Image (cartoon, rainbow, N blue to C red; front, side, top):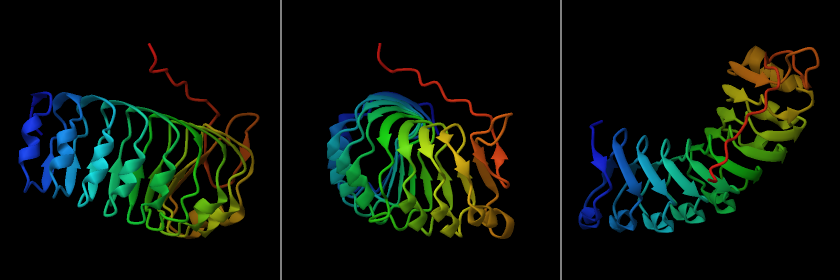
Length: 247
């Protein structure tokens, strides 16, 4: 990375043949310019670890060849644009560590080619959608450190290629779906700092005992644990405090 500063130049729209744009880890700021959507052959767009602010323009959904989009570690706000689902070839999407609000876009569940999705450390709220109809290729799903509530959809247990699932530090309740025991490729699963109750199913623990699951965390610590788990790394329940982005 370099030490670039200032806003993105509007002249980017003139780079019609540009394929890879990596401006990560600089001190760039300002708004994400609409002109980026006029670079038709972009495959990789890395703007992570800067100081970009404002909303993500919906026009970004017109970058038909985009396979990798990194917007994490900025100061972006507003809601996540559903138009990103139009990027049919997208393989990697990271919007973590911003200030996005609202619900997870239901349109995103149709992105069949997506393998890694990270929306962690934002201010997203609502229920976790059912991904199974579209996101069959997901290897990593990170929704940690938001305000998602209600129960964990049992359908997540049908994402058979899933290896990393991070749901910690939300407001989830109910039991851990026994269907998670079908995720035989799972390597890490974090569920702590929620309001989950009950007992983690033996089939899930079997993944830790016999297969690849090396980390499984839940609120099974303390004198009065919320959840019973014989194979978990136990945490005392410590709900995360989210600082409002409102002035």
